[in-house]
Image 1 (tube, rainbow, N blue to C red):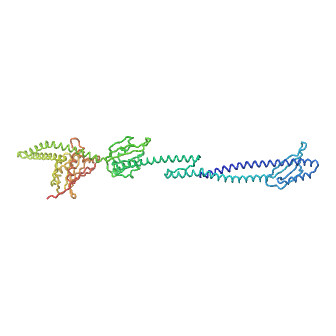
Image 2: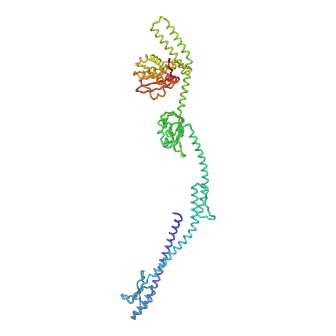
Image 3: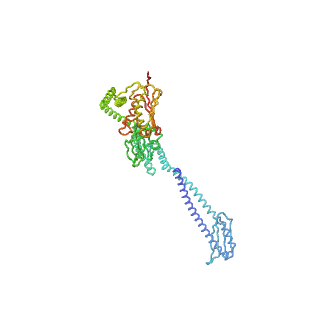
Length: 576
């Protein structure tokens, strides 16, 4: 309901109630006056008749009394007139037809010498009273309507000017405010100091203050948007992955670098818990909420990417707090350092190789000189005709082993980058047979059987000594693995041709390679053998040699089936 309607409704109600109250009071008062007038009139008639009654009673002239009664009843306002003696006998009576309305009866005693002779009863008609009251009520209603109409017109003029127009202006200006137009003002009449004018002035003051505040807010908003754009640009351009979690640990932001590193899209992770996405210790190590408020800086941990790869990452994290220092979430950054770790390992490997090379270069002459002496004296003894066949056989073994020791020194120098491969056409089967023959004695002494199954494969252009070293190292590892298990076993060596490659497979039924070290078996200087039993260079040297020959090494291992190494060598050449 509008103010105008509500005001007029209340005003009308007040006026109607007021006029009704006044009318009721006036009608009541007028009725009392009319009743009092009838009372006085009745008493006057009764006093006049009392004299006539006494004379008539004394002279027994009741006819005259009857005539007076009928004359009096001719009055329009009198319904009936009756004179009754004290013993109840009616001395005279006259009446007209009863008129509408309750009659008003006035009784007056007839007394003589202090003795009551009878009573005069005058009955007045209330029709006149009712008519007067009806006219008063009608006049009151007309008066109410006229006054009400005049009041409405006058109030409408003043109300419209003093209330409706200012309120409408306030509404219009408020609507403009809602649209963002803060420059509109409410026009206030001069020399007017009513409440609405004060309200309009207060509204204008508020508008001026709001306009200034909004200008400040717009400037602040521009600054905030600029800073937000800067931050978004920085976050997007970060090479490090960044994600933000809320107070419940749910991811609410995920930048492009995080998508690139983890393989997960933003839509896949937002709204989910960190542990649902990264199935590793990454969340425990990195998430700020999991670290009791401690700031994490450059802590290394692992994540599992969407495609199942394990990456080493460096993480940093910190809690996010609101202005009341309440924790509202956390921000986490992570950087893929897998390649960096590999480079560090390669650097360490290079440093180790350099150290080995320096050591090898330093002791090469010291080792080669005694080996040369051994070979020289072995050759001299072999030329002696006085030695037995058994001695000659043993001397040949000494010479061969001394020669192999010299080749090992040369291989170590080659591994450290100080010796180039000597490529020649070589028979893979011949190399396998020689190595198997050399290691068969050690295998048989430990209850291990070495079986060789060779197919007809072509010659390959390779460094015979290096390929021999590859087969020797892998075969020796297989024998030593079974030997360490203490339960015996078998080793098989196969050769076969596959397309343009020659494949060498060395398989055993030993205990297999533990799952947690499979990814490290080709690392330089990594070994599970006791001190003095291995240097950790065997498989690393093998991998380097095979790659130098444009080949590859693969392996499979199972704790129940054992281990199988597959060496593939390419660059085949037919032997004429």
